[in-house]
Length: 208
Image 1 (spheres, rainbow, N blue to C red):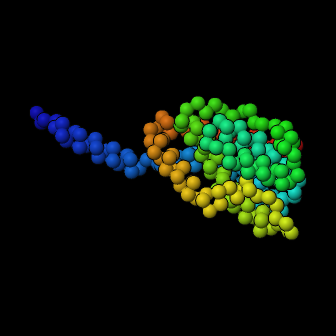
Image 2 (cartoon, one colour):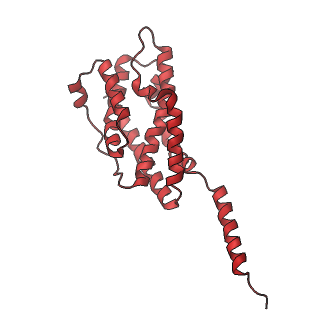
């Protein structure tokens, strides 16, 4: 009767399988992107963002869009504890657009965010926030390119400017390092979808 594989051969085979699996498994970034692509595409059809991308948004609509965005970004930045740079930029723009500090403080806030009670969930939500910043830069270029006369305030859309790419790459590296476990990645994916869908629903009432 033939002997089975030796322990050395078994370990070698398992190592080969693990290496092949590591090469073919999608990255955390690719997995998160695939899981949120449908919501992302729907947001392209949002009337406010569509007008902004065309460069034809009216001043009142622009203010309403930023005010509604503020109601989402402030609570999620507080929850993420990664700093309040985006909500503070929104405050700067809204003040420049004629809102008072009291008016900004009185804006409604999104209360439907899912709890970010683990690091993978926080990373999933942060993926939505960080990814939106890249899209914001494209919208800023359209807004400023098509503005007549004095350019509208765009601190929020411009974000980190030239440093935005480096910030994004640093965040992607964090994703790949911290979401190597499939269970953690699945938690991040669900959090990203929940966050994006909550954002979609929240921004649906931007013009009311």
